[in-house]
Length: 390
Image (cartoon, rainbow, N blue to C red; front, side, top):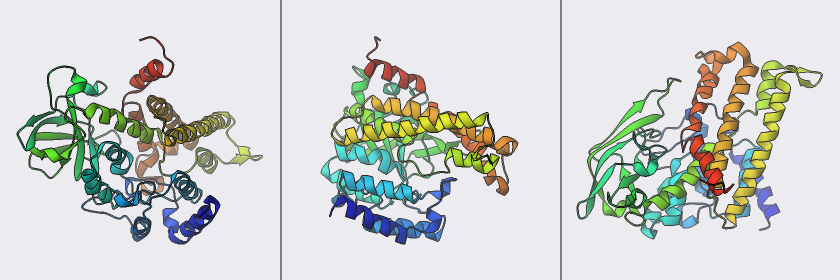
């Protein structure tokens, strides 16, 4: 099938199968389906959309069919993404298993691990969370102290993780643990998969300024984990950690994020037009400047992803994407608040989307911390891209 024919058939299928309610911008957590062992659908349309896409293999269209994916090649996957964007289709399934763990398993996992976990990710059967940061090991991730003691056929895990997104809802966690305390700290880390229902695992939500609690503290008290759950080699987890961080930083930068109302349209809806232009003459050039920078950023993303598909590693480029995407996101919310005026500060009430805008504004401030602080990203860019001296 030619790519033109594939595009035509894909567009027709999406138009026929994506419910209209699933062609609206994402505004709240439940607008996305996260899957898990206790699935929750916000509406019947959300359930229909997930089931139709899963049946076609398009929850993760670019993964091989043997692992539950759609088996699409690079061009076909790109076309599907473009056509979904044209219709503002929401992702049928949103998952850290798709965006972070899956790519790591495809690259480092054994065949048994791929067959065990990847099909369940595409089917939305497991809600995964990430166990990286610790109270004393955030930017210095290699300083982590959560310990995995070798007990023969299993590890005994003790320690704590923090800022674990949705750990209180997750079924499993992909976790960095220390399996060796001697030598270089980077060399004593392993990558382990842990069932969150194992005795000794507990979580405690962290309440944010917005009132939400997406982050948690996660505790491991004498948790037994089979050795078969280690990905890659023992003490070889740092390479996996760096690889996975690349995908996390892409996600935070906004690559492949759900559609939302464009900034200029949001401003038009709240301020209005004058002679065909935004009525606010002060905000007009600011929004135009942001919009141009955003388009350039998207072109840069497209170029880098095409390079990655040709076998070139993103490497330090992911730090650039993460930093600039973070800055754009923060600036966008500042402009949205400015365009909305005083009503944009209302914290609750159905007429104001229950304070979605100011709460999201507060949330964006965390973008410059999570996934590696902006300072760390700039250091990486300086050293590995600009080749500046240490």
